[in-house]
Every structure is written in structure tokens, then in C-alpha cells.
Length: 398
Image 1 (cartoon, rainbow, N blue to C red):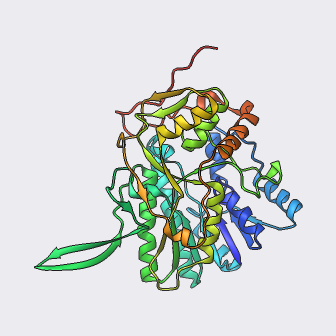
Image 2 (cartoon, rainbow, N blue to C red; image 1 turned 30 degrees about the vertical axis):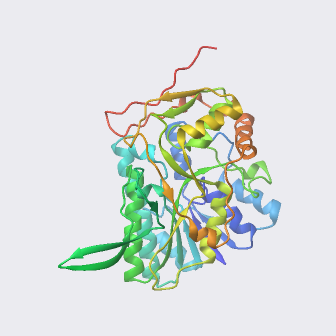
Image 3 (cartoon, rainbow, N blue to C red; image 1 turned 90 degrees about the vertical axis):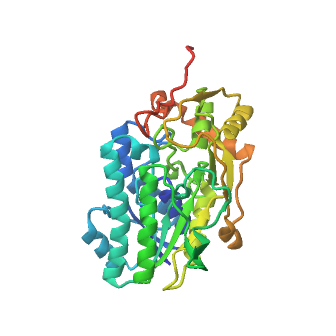
């Protein structure tokens, strides 16, 4: 199968591209380097030393004999180049990661808010329009987020995308199925809600085949492919804008830095290991909807945890100090989160759950590259409103 991975140089895109190539697919990467430019803008770089995209794919070919071709296209702004790429290469499936993925970055200032909406929504819409204009039958697999459901307490198990409701009207009860009501918690999350609406329209109007993956928070560092050579290593973000919570805790522990828990730490989140993420992408590609079907929605997560419980777990196994700091986000101080992920389990996913061994693997990676860390980039300083405060810990003099 020929598969185009949009955003294939990124945190999720790179290990996915390698995994799909490794199992025998002809993989193409489309990436304009925007995430690396954001590194330069923020002065916050991957803890792991990631090579250039050209060096990465050359190393992959040297090690495996498999070629991954790359294309430098800004799919949000260069519609003609995107349309021509699809028409020429004729991929069977497109995996769409090509969006600005950080909620804190999307809330920093008006420039970041506007960029996130412009980039993310344009990228998604351009892709859908190009497929329609080219009259192609391409399965679109999109990486969404659990954040479309919101981070309040639903009081129920959140289904996979759709909700059956009963409407009482004119003395009758009408049964309907609707998209689960959205409650985005940031501008970034809002763009994923807009994506979801675009998908519903184009699946209905133009019968595009679309799978939308509502993903939890990624943790972990390596996949079997990225472990083969240091030149293939995935990025490890630890800064306050792009670092994911569990990886940040493990990195902080490795550096002897306090584990910074925002607010009460009562936020409950869904998680998935990076190894399971690439496997889920594979399963989604191999089980597409039929033409004319509604959008296929999966909850791409394996377990839920409360943030303060994760901090205590990491503290117990590493000896790190836990500090409660202000929460830069405007969100519920405490929430419950129950989510079903039956669709992937039925397809054969065997979840990777939290274990001390895997936690130590992340910590050891952080220790290995600790010399590359800039401690000033660790605190979360992007504020949701002027009423929030940065998550700055109190550091002890050494």
C-alpha cells in the first residue's frame, strides 16, 4: 500500500512513518519543517538530538534497504502543490498529522492563536478539497484528540465519537445519533473540533472515506524502529509548551528538578504509549470505512490517570520531589474521565500500560541527554487568560 504521512517529521509522524515502512508499505513523507522552525522560535529544542529529515530517511534506507521519499509542501498554504502531489503519487491512504499540536502554544498570544487556526483548519480543508477535485478515492486517517470531548466530568463513559439521544417533541420521542458534544479547552482543541465538522460534511456530501482518531496524551520514547540507530531517534519535548505531562515528569526526575503539578493535580487524562499509537494507525489504515459511510471515529487511548497520581508514582520510583504550582490553564480543578476504546481492542490492540520498566526507560533516555536540557524552558508559562499564573516551581540553591 502507498501511504502518505503528512507531518511525517514530527513527534507522532516520524515513528508512524518508520512503522508503516517497516511492515512493507511504500511510505511518503510530506513535511515543511514547521515544527523545527517553532523550536527555533521558542529556543526550546528536543532533548534527544534529532537529525535532519534527509539524514533520517538516509539512515533508514541504509539500515533497512527501504526508501521513504520526502516532499517539502506547506499543505495549509500551497494548495496547488498538495493537489499535484496527490494526483501524481496516487496514495491509497493519507495519514494527517500536519497540524500545530500544542494547546499551550496555541494560547500564548494572538499570533499563535491565529497561526494555529489558519494552519490546522486550512491544512485539513485543503486536503479534503484536493481529494474531491482530483476525484480520488483516498482513505484519510486523521490524528485528532481526546480534548474535543472536554476535560470536565461527563458523568458517563464517553463513547467513540457518536452519542445516541432521545428528543421529546410534539408528544413524540425521536431517536437520533449525533456527534458527541464538544467542549474544546484551547484554541488548538477548537481546531480539532472544526476538523471533525469538516470530516462529517465531506463524508456525507462527497462520500470521502475518513477515520478520525481521538488520541490521548502520548508517553514513552522509543518504538522498535526508532531504537535501531541513534540517527532514527524520535524527538523528546520537555518544554512547557510541547512537552507531554508524563514524559515531562520523568525528565524532571532525571534532572533532579521538582515534578511540577499544576493546580491540585486533579486533572484526569487519557494516555497511550507511542508504540501503541503507531499500531493504532496501522489498524485504522487496515480497517477503513466504506465509501458513503459516516466518519469512523476511534478513541485512541489505553488508560486514564489523575495527574497527581502520576506524579506520586514517578516520585516513588525515582525519589523526585513533587511541587504543586499554579495552573496556567483555565480548566476544572478536578475531573473524572471514563472513556471506551472498544473499537481498537476488537481489532486486536494489546495495550501497553504503565509499568516501572517503561517509566525507567523514559527516565534513562532523559538522563542520557540531560546535558542538552535548558532548565529555563521547563516551566509552563503560556497562560489561558490574564487571570492564570505560570507554573513556576521553587528551586533550591545547590
